[in-house]
Length: 297
Image 1 (cartoon, one colour):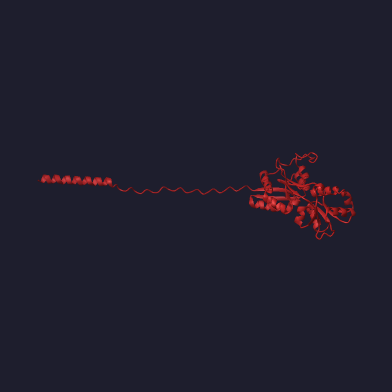
Image 2: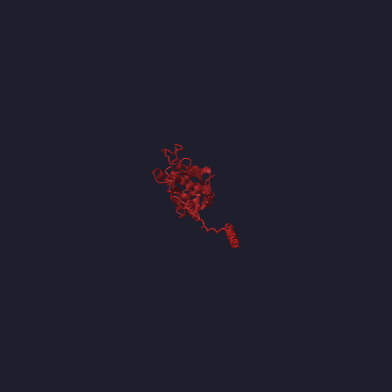
């Protein structure tokens, strides 16, 4: 009897142990939590490389002083790495400075003659020294101006036209201010006098003309009423607040075309090309037109 009880107890213990084993398999212990994978920090954006500073030296006709100064300031505001240094003077003086080795990137002349004298591709009759300063494929005509007859405030001599000027010069009743022969505006004036068959030498000998070394000097003489009239550019008359009583026709003195080009001695030819491109933009055209320039298509 005891043996049966002992056997039953052993079977019961064995059954209980098997149940525990099955329970352990069906309900495994939870796995230990794993640490989250480290998040890779974002790399800070690399700062943009600042553009290299550039200095552009622009030689330009004195008649462009106001407009180019305004446009240069606007361009430098948009391109803060660029510093533009202007040299305004008569085109003849600027041409001589370039010929003599002045640092320059861009030349804008008030006449074709001065640019031709620096362009190896121009006629040898004009470029008599065989000078070669114009960078290939950069020359173009940028603006047209008008040769204007301007009078001082109140116009004391009562001049209303070129015909009036000629009559006054013939009878010696007026004084005319004009540019020197090496200044484009002076050369245009010489053509006007020749058109009316007047001798400049005779007028000078009679004391009927005075001279200026640039269009700005001629403009000043008219503004100060030191003369009865002066032949200047329409744009200079506008800038000085002078009255224009007449403008010359193409037959009288030809067209007043301003050529522009990068010089082949430029230290920054690409930047120079970019500035000339800006001067050909619609925004620049609007500034030029405000004072009487006509952009050349």
